Amino acid sequence: MKATDLVVMPTHLRFLGRRFACTIGRGGLTDAKREGDGATPRGTHRIVGMLYRPDRLGPPADWAVPIWPGDLWSDDVTDPDYNMMVRVPHPNRHEYLRRADPMYDLVILTDWNWPYPVKGRGSAIFIHQWRGPGRPTAGCIGLSRRHLAWIAPRIMYNTRLVIA
View (cartoon, rainbow, N blue to C red):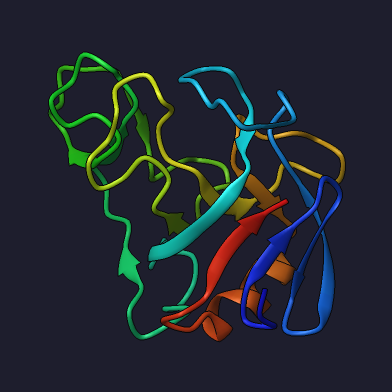
């Protein structure tokens, strides 16, 4: 592992020599991720994108993409666009990226089950703002808003998410 890797343990994340409190999925860590299990998949994952709410914060990095009204993420295994960003109107089950709460104001995307998703293996694993210390996610990695804002602009092209 390198200092530029985001290394996740069950209670914290290490990055660039610093340690940040984090949360993981309510299903704990797993080697056999499935859609809806609430678990966080172990392994080494590439960082493939970053999304942000331009009405709530400035671009965290020059390569970050704005989240606009109507941006969704498909989590429906019957959808041809499963585990992909889609737009309204979208007939299949999906998650709104532009939420009323601040959880997705800044989202770091990983390559979990992407870009060629295996149906049922679990949709996106994001790094996003947590609901609070000790409050689990649905499988993603949660960080405080302040820590997420510190980490985002320091991510490099070779940064990986390593989940031990």
